[in-house]
Amino acid sequence: MTMTIADALLYSLLGMAVVFFALVLLILIICIMNVFKKKEVKAAPAVAAAAAPIAEPVYAPGTAGELKLYDTDERDAAMLMAIVADTLGAPLNELRFKSIRELK
Image (tube, rainbow, N blue to C red; front, side, top):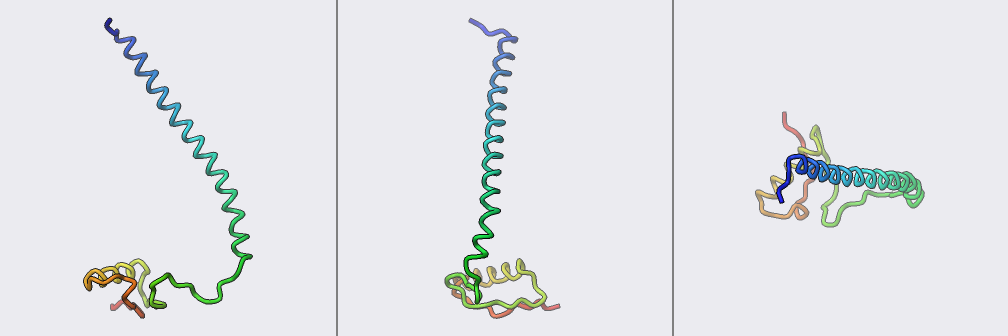
């Protein structure tokens, strides 16, 4: 039993229709999930703001204090700290950077 060109086209179009239907269904599911997520996000900041104000800065575990940047981008400072840590072969949280200043 051989398949004619018309049958092959029909099967391929049917296959593509099934795939596109599944993609549209996934898009709809994701859109519906985003609508519900946006409602939750709008309610969350009001609760978080009313909880407790932070009096002092909170540092990540293993940090060595505050870093002052002078005429330097945060991105550039982060790259510089990563390069120094890699060159020394030490973890970044064991190094202490007090300030970073760009020399012109």
